Image (cartoon, rainbow, N blue to C red; front, side, top):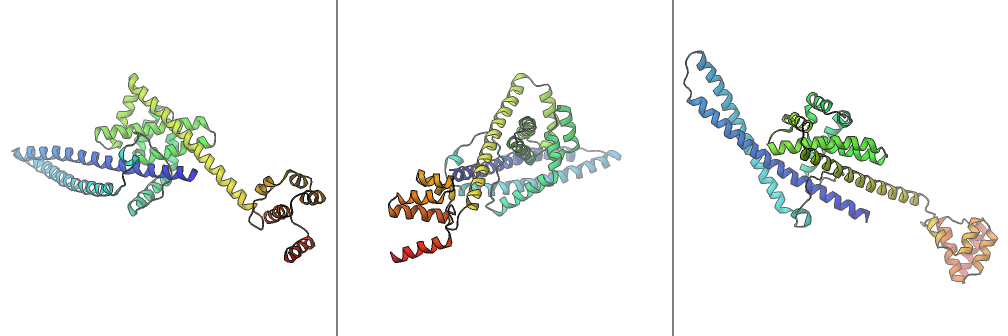
Length: 338
C-alpha cells in the first residue's frame, strides 16, 4: 500500500512539474513577444527621428542599443518557441488519465522524484546544486519573521527568488515537523508562502520574479482583507500538507526500520522468531517464556506427531530454539528411519 502511495505521489509530482514547465514557457514566450513589440516600436520611433550635431550622435547610440535589444529578443522568441514545440511533443506522448486531464491548483510538493529522461536528470542536478550551494541562505530566509527583514534579505540575495527556494523551504518545514518542532515548521512554511506569492505575482505580471518581490512586500504590508485572507488561507493549506507529508514519511521510516529489524533477527532457516513464537500453541509459548526445556518437551508430546515436528522445525529454523547437538542428531536419525 505504501509503495503504491509513493508511486502515485511521484507521478503527481512529475505531472505537476511538467504542467508548470509548460505554463512557465507560455508566460515567458508571451512576455518576450510583448517586450519585442515594445522594442520594435521604440526602434521605429528612433529611426524616424531626425537630429543634428551631438543630438545625432546620441540618436545613433540609442539606435544601436535598441537594434541590439530587438535582435536579442528575436533570438529569445525563437528559443522559447522551440522549447514550446518540444514541450507539446512530450505532452502528446503522455497517457490520458486523471492526472493529465485535471490537477489541483497551487499544490507544490517536495518529494524526491526519480528522473526518467536526460532533461529531467539535468534539471534535478541543477536543483540539487542550487540547494546545496545556497542551503544556509535559504534556511536563514526561512527563519526571518518581519516583512522588512525578508525584503532586505532578498534585496541582498535576489538569486534566492526562485522556485527552488520555495520547494526547499517546504522541505525544511517537513523536516521540522518530523522532528516535532512545530513552531519552526509554521515559521518556515510562512516564508515558503511568501516566496510562492512572489512567484505567482511574477507570473501574473509576466516579469522576472526578481524584479517584483518589492512589489509583493509593498502589497502585503498594506494589504486589504481579501488579499491577507488569501495569504492566510494558502498558508493553512500548506501547513496541512506539510503535516500530512511528515506523517507519511514517519510511517514509511517506521516500516523500513521494522523490516530491517525483522531481517536482522531471522534465524538460520530464514524464519522470524517473533512470528514463529506468536504462531505456537500457548503451552509451547509458556515454555519459552520460562526457558523450560522439560515443559517444551511435555507441550510437544501432547500434540499430534506431525504437528509437533512442524512447530519444532519452525522453532529451529527461526533460531527460537537451538537444540543440543545430540538432540539434533537424534532427530535427524529419527527422520531418516521414518
